Each structure stands twice: as C-alpha cells, then as structure tokens.
Image (cartoon, rainbow, N blue to C red; front, side, top):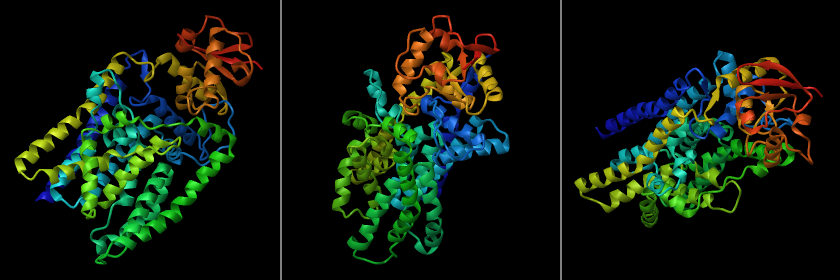
Length: 513
C-alpha cells in the first residue's frame, strides 16, 4: 500500500509542478496587451534569451555554435548542442522557438521528477522517509523568504539549478541535467532485473549528460568513483555484483572525451577563451548558503556524521553527494556555483533521515515533518507571485514593445544571417534571440570585452566621443533605434546611416561603409 501511495504522490506532484510552473508564463503571454510582447522568460531572462539565441542558430541549420552577443563571429564549436537541437526541431515542426523551449522544459520536468522518485525509492532504505523526502525535494526551498523581510535576496530566489522546483520553472537543461545525474548515480537493488537494462543505458545517459550539462559529468565521475572504491575495498560482503566499477568504466569512456573536447575548445579558440575568462560564477557566501538551504541543511549536516558512524548503510550515495557537492562548491576556482546544481535533493533526503532517527513517536514525527515542509515552501511561492508584478508593470527585461518586435522580425527577414546590429545594451539582449542577428553587446558573459563594449554603446547613443577601439559604426551593419536607444540618446544620430525600415517608435538604419 505504501508503494502505491508513493507512486500516486509522484503522479500528483508531476501534475502540480507542471501547473504551477506554467501558469505564470500563460498569464505573461496574455499580459502584454496591444502594445507589448512577452519575451518568454520570467526567471533569469538575461540567460534565458541566450538559450533562445542558441536555438535560433539551430533553427538556421547550424550545428556549430558561435557567440551571437559579440560582433566578431569567430570559428564555431560543438557546444550547447542541446539547444541547437531544439532549434532544429523548431524548424522541422515549424513551431516558434519559445514554444519548443517551453515544451522541452515541461518534458524535462517530468523526466526529473521521475528520476527523483526512483532515486529516493532505491537510495533511501527507510520507506517511511521516502514520501516526505520526495515532497521536499520536488517542492522545497530555503528560508530566503525570512531574509527577504530583512531586505536580503538570497540564493534560493535565483540560483535555480540548485532547487528542482526552480529548475522546473526556469529552463529545460537544468531539469534534464538533474534527471540524468540521478539516473547515473541511482543504485541497483534488484540486479537480476535491472543490471542489463540500466548499465546498457549508461553510455547514452553519459553522452546525454555531457551534452546537456557538462559539469554534471564531473560530479557523476566523482560520485561513481567513490561508490566504486566503496564496493571494491570497503564492502566486506559480496551478496550483490560489483555494479559501480563497470559503470565507472563506461562513464570514463563516454564522458571524458567530451570534457576534453570542451576544454580544448575553451583554451584553443580565442573567442571562447575570452568568453570563459568572463564566465565567473562564484558560490554564495556561507551565510547566504545556510539561509538558502535552511532549515534542512541545519539537520542534514549533523545527520551525515550519524550515517557515517552507522557505516552509511544503503544511503551512502546520498551522503557522498551532499559532502562532495558542498566541497566542490567552495573549492577555489571560477566555476564554483556550477556544481550547486541539484544539491537541494541530497540535503532534503538526509534531513528527513535525520528527523526519522531523532523522533520515534509517529504523531510528533508527523508534526515535525509538516513543519519542515511548511517552512520550505514560501520562497518558491514568493518567486511565483513576484512574476505578477513584472507582468503588471510590463517589466522591460521580460517584455518588448510591439514596435521593437516588428523591427526584430524585419531584421530576421531582410538582413544577412551574419549581420551585426548596433543597439542599446538592453535591446542587444533580445536581438540574437528574436532576430537571429549578432550584436555588439548583449550579455555580460557572452559579449567579449563586455564592459568596454557596453560603455562604447552608451557613449555612442549619448553622442559622446569614443576613443581607442573600433566605434559601433565601424563594427555594425545595421542600427536599430527604438525606445531603449532613444532613452539613452540625445535625439540625434551620426552621419553614414540610411533609413531602411520604420514603424511607430522604432527605426532601422543601414550603415553606409
């Protein structure tokens, strides 16, 4: 009966998560009125538009990715193939890019939740702990809502990859990366039924993870390596076959070459090397981390030591993930935060294990478990409700004007694929995603020499002198002059421009070289 209840909890959770993470987008899509168009992203639109820009390159038929937020195209590389693939699908089925993006997001949410369900079922030995652990892993967050009262915005509001619910709300590759990671580290219990099927899929899961979320391969490599060491040298009984050494071998064979290729591209290609130098993602400070993962982390960390003393039992992969995840998070390197992805899952599971070990009375256990769940939900509720404010105000980071949208569509139909568009920094975020054209500046990481290019554009539209590097007119082929440019500008444009398109508030000029 418990197993049946746990399964129906999965079904109900999938339906609820899909509804909760889709309703704000539906409201936003209808919230633009006659004058605005929803750009498609409510959570982290700065990065969201870059994903759409990658899809646009796939829509154009490319499999090699080039940075669209910098004027110099450079030589492409096989990066971000997941989003390029989605772009190819959009072209094949003649669907809007943003539609394919959100359909992929919903599908990946289902994959992630099923993977969490199976991981908890097979990695958590205490059957009573599985349901609360799944609820927390699927819906929970930290105490950022308490910090918000004090005017602090903590990581549980915006580091979406750490929390499954926020991942489900944000983009497809976070959810899919978490799901694939869980599939690769989930232990086998009934090896006679599962061994051939699971390990036969391991090469494909490894390749998929290397494409979708390359940092996940590093985490999986470490965790499966630790499980391999445990099976070979620390387990004194041999009731089950040694599964993890074989899995470790497969992951090395199919995952390591992909990582080596990515490193080669980053360090041999000057464009991607410059991009990587700017791509700094430091971890939150310790206080922020504790608040963002509380109250669960306050119970999970002491429980780790209890489980270690009990020789970890069957829960060792969960404990390894928690310990390794935190360790990777604070190693002194530039990509610390990349390894926070999915970390809320082991923290939630170990915390629930701690509750079940501390409290034996069923009524008390029910009350304490409910309290932890209630404390862990408000941050995500605040995130969902905050979308309403952006929709009502037609926030400029999530909406574009109808005139701008029409100008973007004109650019996509009437300019060469490699054309470089001069635009205000804010407009530059949308052009690669909505017109498929390059810009001089549009993103703090994906624009080479981002600060210089941003300052150059601001000075250009203000009519101030630009010294040193190439001016925007020397780099661009067309210039868009819409509401954002006019807000920056002094009302005049330099010579050397020919008007080629105009609507109510937006003009497009061709640069006469």
